[in-house]
Length: 148
Image (cartoon, rainbow, N blue to C red):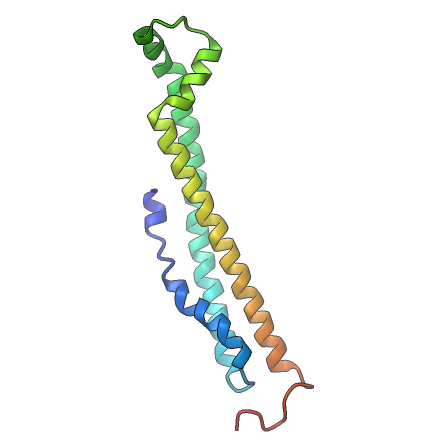
C-alpha cells in the first residue's frame, strides 16, 4: 500500500461515526456539542480525503510509468526469452503480465477505495450535521423546557 495511505488514520473517525447513532436520542441542549463534533468530523475527513486524492493521483502516475516501461523496455526481453516474435499486440499483452504493473494496479485500487470511503464518510457526517441542525432549530418539536 502507498506510504501516503498509511499515514491516514481512519480510526480517528470511529468516535464521530458512533455519534451518528446517537442522533435519535438527541435533545436541543446537546445539539450544539453534536454540531461541533460533526463539523470537526467533516474537517478531519476532508484533510484525510485530500491526502487520499493526492495518493490516488500519484498512483495513477506511477501506473502509467510502469506500463510504459513494461511496454517499451521489458516486453522485448520477455519475447526473446520465450522465443516469441515481437509485435505491438504482444507488447500490450505483456504489460498486463508484468509484476510492477500488477503492483501499481493494486496500489491504484487501494487509493481509489480510500478516496471513495472518505467521500462517503464526509457525506455521512454532513447529513448528520444537517439532521442535528434540523432537530435543534425545529420549533415544533419538543417543548421549551426540553432537557431541563
